[in-house]
Length: 280
Ligand SMILES: NC(=O)c1ccc[n+]([C@@H]2O[C@H](COP(=O)([O-])OP(=O)(O)OC[C@H]3O[C@@H](n4cnc5c(N)ncnc54)[C@H](OP(=O)(O)O)[C@@H]3O)[C@@H](O)[C@H]2O)c1
Image (cartoon, rainbow, N blue to C red; front, top):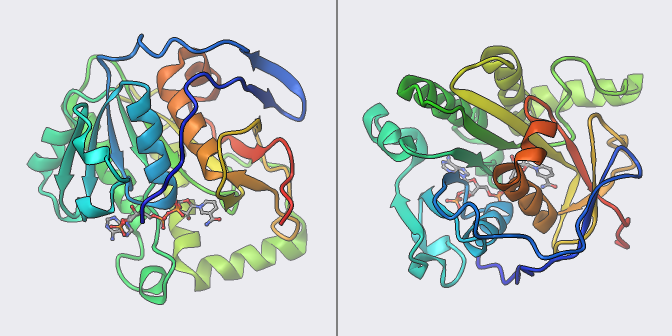
């Protein structure tokens, strides 16, 4: 699927945190030149959100490597971009040596992997796609022992609980529904296990990997717009908020390119929602 989502380079936006405290009103074009020598490895770059991440990173002049099952699914024109390297392979089938080769020299790894929304994608193997990919990628980063910690940015979901119990408590009914969901729908369990792995196994003091698990609510099309970031859950699963995929992509790029954003959110599971509720 090709996504035509023009990225406005001189966006005027403000990122709000925990309801309404403005932490980053820029009103100015960003300096997109400062990270030109950096390199990101992106997995899931052919997905709905992943394509937007790819377009936004490329528009910032950052070098990108993508590992995709089919290069034909990349956004139109992306493959011709000089700062993009495409590896056509099944991520989970790559040998350790190959995977390590693609990670070597990367400053960040971004994962927008997810189970394709079809019966086979949701219930077929690999049911543990996200946690397996997350574990492999992080373990390979550790094996490389980079001098500077590599940033690992995972696309997660508001169906994922903060493993440290730092979310506002869900109601009994919501908890029961989630419990059933995790047992019946493999992707729900998979996303939770991936977050648990980052929180418990990679932790906060790992010398080689630092991480953020970004939790959007119901995904929507649309351009980059104002969005808010929250340390914990905001809405119940029964009255969801919405998040433009372009906003998820924008925040992921900010995490990579903006040291302040990284320092604010590393080791956390920010919930990202549109500042203005959408009309559905
Ligand atoms: N839908 C929502 O409202 C929502 C809300 C919040 C969070 N999320 C989470 O956000 C994540 C991304 O969502 P999305 O809708 O952007 O994803 P998506 O469009 O379904 O894309 C999934 C990506 O994962 C890749 N993939 C799937 N199975 C794979 C496998 N076995 N091996 C290698 N790659 C594989 C796909 O590659 P191919 O193109 O080759 O298939 C594609 O690049 C998911 O984890 C989802 O749970 C979704």
